Length: 142
Image (cartoon, rainbow, N blue to C red; front, side, top):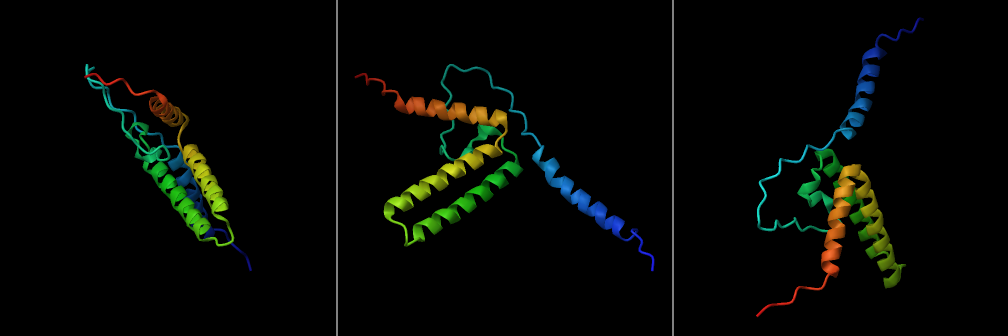
């Protein structure tokens, strides 16, 4: 009884292609930013967004793969938060600490999905928002 590999060849090729597809999807780069509009004398409002939600920032030009990965991270984190809230063995302080830890880990995971350029852009935007919040409001003129 002689065993031939011919029937297994198409299956092996299909398997190899299936493994290659996710790797090539991760290598996709975000589209280039649109050309800048002519300079205006009016200040341009930066998009305001949640500090924990880079997926809502149009300046990052996230790919659909990045958005899907971030969505999966968020859904997993939400399940963890719900489980922590329902855990009767935890004190309120322990629940709060656990939820803060989950949120911190989620931010780190989401940040890791971004490319280095996107990380720089996002970090700069968040730094500007923190500085603007910390700055005293301008005096009102009457």
